[in-house]
Structures are given as C-alpha cells and as structure tokens.
Image 1 (cartoon, rainbow, N blue to C red):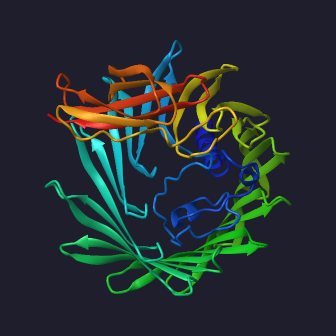
Image 2: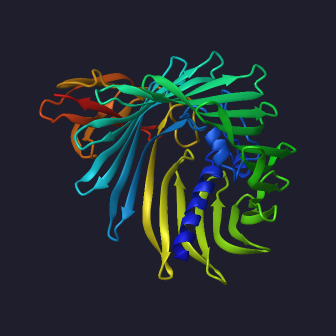
Length: 497
C-alpha cells in the first residue's frame, strides 16, 4: 500500500516538474522559476513561482493560448504507445490542426479499444480577427458521430481583457443553453480585478461566487479573496495572500473566514539560491489547538551546475522529516531535459521506480519520450510518445534543417465535401512530393501524388465516391533534391454522403 501511495506522489512530483521546469529553448529560463499566467495556474502551481504575475492581457484567467514555439514550430501530433514485450501497441493519438495564422483550430484525440483506435474527444476553436480566442467547443465520440459536450465563448474589452466568459451546455435540440458565466471588471489603476460567477436558472442569472484580486504592481499579486452567495449577499469563504522578497515569492498563506475573522489554515514558504532557483519549498498546516504551524511536506532542490537537478520530497512528523520520493533530472547543453528518474524510499535506501528518456530533433523539438519501470532489478520499457511538428517561420531554425512558411498545405475545398474536393499546396523549392490520404485510424487509402514537382502552387482533385462517409486525413511530405529541405503536414477533411 505504501508503494502505491508513494508511486502516486512520485507521479505527481514528476508532473509538477515536467510542467514547471521543462523548457525547449532557454537554459537560463529553464533553471529560473517561471512566471505563470491565469488565476488557476497561478494558484495551483505553487511549487515553482518566483513571481505570481498577470497574464499578457492582464487577466486573472487568461484564455487558452496555443503559441508557436520559440524555434518557429507548432505541435502537429502525438502518438502514445504501450510496449507489449514484442512490439508497440497504439494507445492514444492526438492530432492538431491550425489556420493560416497558426492558431490551433482543432485537436482530435483517439484512444485504443477492442476494435482498434477510435475517436474519443475533439476540441474545436475559433478566433476573432485579431487572433484572440473566441470560442472553444468540446465534443465526445458516441460511436457514430461527434456529440457536443460543452462550449465556452470569450468576450474582451478594448484592452484585450476578459469581460465575459460564457460556459454553455447542449440543449438537447442541436443548440446550446446558458449554464455558467464569469463577469470581469477592473479598476482603472489595474490594482484590482473582480470576477463574478453566475449560474443560469429558469431564465435568470443567479449569483454563485465572487473573486477579488489585489496587486502590488503589474507583476505581483498580493491577495485573492473568494466569496460565496448566501441568497442575499456575498460572504467571505477563503483568502490567499502572497509575500515577496526582492521580487521573489517567499510565502503563500491560506486563510479561512469563520464568520467573524480570518484564521490561518495552511501556507507554503520558498527559499532560493543566488541564481533565483528554488532550493526549498515547505508546506505547513495550522494547528488550532496549539495555535502553531506544523510541517506537512518539504521539497528540496539540489542543483549540480546546469546539468542536473535532484528533488527530494519528505513528509513532516513533529521535528523529523521522513523521505518519500526523489526525482533526478538530467539536462543537455541547450537546457533540454534528457532524462528523469524517480525513486521511492525503502526505510534505508532509495529504490528506483520509473524513468523517462527524452530525444530531440535537429530543431530542438522533443520528438520521442520513452518511459520505463523498474521491476525485478531491471528496467523494462513501458510506453513511449512520438511527437511531430509543423514549421511556421521564414528563417533557418538551425544549421541543418531549413524551413519556411512558403511551403504550405492548404485546407481542402469544399470541406465537408461529396464526393470530390480540391487539395492545394505550395512549395518554394523543387522537391520530391508525396500526397497521401488516410482514414481516421491511420490506414492508407490512396496515394494521390508521388513524384518530383517544381517550385510553385499545386492542386489536385480528390474523388471519394467509393469511400464511406467519415473523417479522412491527407498528408503531404516533401524533400528537396539535396536533402536540405524537408516538410511534412497533415490536415483533416470530412466526407458526408
């Protein structure tokens, strides 16, 4: 039982550090604690922030941002596979589609079941003309078609800040009904932000909760207070306060409203080294009986130059600390994570549990992650994730691979279609080009193009009269004669008969 609990703790620890420490682009930024955007992210990622900050558009809860990586790529697909002992078994696939401005407009997730890979979830996004997120639609696969699950619509003021976020649910008639909304207001000096949450009932909006945030300045949040509606007025529920030293967060205090006063419940404290890296994160709970603080967890970070980081998680017991878990992170020269090994404490020594190995392409993009578990005194491969990317920039991203947006795969037209549609693309160099169509399970349906073509714009008509209705993928691959230029892109199209 202890091993299971420890494994869960280690898993959480690995997730925390993969999210807060992983960086593909900048070593110095990697080893510094990161700024966070969005209220939810700010208040949940308390193990890492040196500064709790506002988002770029000065919102507590920023819209979902799908940004281009600093090296000029966007994530195209992720394939998750399990190792069976004799080969790899597809477990989950994720495909991303972007518009011409490289805004993410669709993510499709497939999972492996008894019949093979099957659609599971789809997220569709729309944007305003300024590329600000307008709506997000989530759908689940019911075995035949996509069924609406939820929809969120975003509205902004002239400064690009939220004014309203509306959460909708299916109304049973093919449309959506109001469910919950968040209303945002701001003080002119930008030192306070307010979020009122309401629920739609029988034609009226009923108050649910109210959040007030106070800032020291543009960068640092000072206090967040949450209140609940009692039917007549808002009453305090809980509060968080943040204390800084030299711009670094050193304490996050949680308080609860008793009806007459604020009382302490929990807090986290942080210590840093000269490079502003967290060396210790301490979690404490408040004992009302003794009116004192008691240790709960301690996380210590030990840095070995810029090549490795060892994190140890301990639980507090009166005046003693008990080892729970350890995570060892290794990095390469550019700051990319190359390996993570997790351990559990077995009363006298650290025993390995799991590890992850990372591999990158020539552009510094993570292309392969392999996870292994330690059993019977040896490492056994458990699963892997394979990543592909789409280039977006117009400059060289490294000395070996040249990419440019002058090579582009366009959306097919019309889409949806029956039975024919036109697929078009453009190339800036003479190259060997292959255009193939696949079904949603990844099985090849037909090869439309497999030949050398000159630079320029190209198109071909695809006739699907012999195919069944459904979602299909079309993928183009191109390689220049000298091998210096490579391009690959995938898009989706829907055949409806």
